[in-house]
Image 1 (cartoon, rainbow over the protein chains, first blue to last red):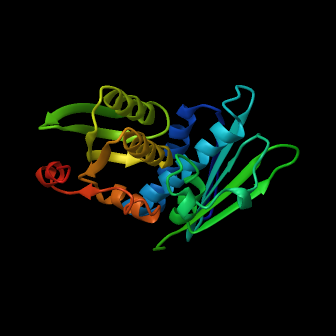
Image 2 (image 1 turned 180 degrees about the vertical axis):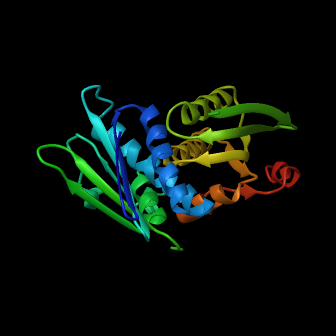
Length: 146
Length: 114
């Protein structure tokens, strides 16, 4: 685990195995920083859930549970925000092609709500392809956001 | 704790009490297996009591939808009881709150199957 502190900024990161246990590890890592940053309980719940959904995407859909691939989780605490990046080593996906889970035809689908929930719970979401392989998701939550 | 499931019979309604976390892995698969087991035994009126569910993720929501359609496809009804605020909020933002028949009172929920 790496840790850099300077002024009010703090970054902690970990390389995690592609397992469901890592979903818990990432959530705990991020929530520890978020709690110290002063986020209220309701925001902690939203941040935790967004991290879990992102980690599940990375472990299950990205790295496909591969023992040879890692998920890199990084969390930074700034003066007004928390920034989390989660990067896998999978083939990637096109965010635009994820079906809208709120469309009438999709309401009763058994899956496909993860990205929607991440968007709903965080203030910013960015997804970018990594070279040669991988997807990096960046989540931002502002202190004092609704 | 992941998830704890126990069923009881109230008249001809099977109440499935769920406690803990319904998340990808053990939690969601336990719920899926239990609902399928109830359906295979011919139970058609299933009331899912989520009053003690502390956490549910998108996989858990998927299992609720899966259970709803599985029971319906066998001619039954799956209804929800005692949603916590967080679970209720989740079902509302995913537009599923109006899909499910949701109750706060168990006796009224049981009567609603008649």
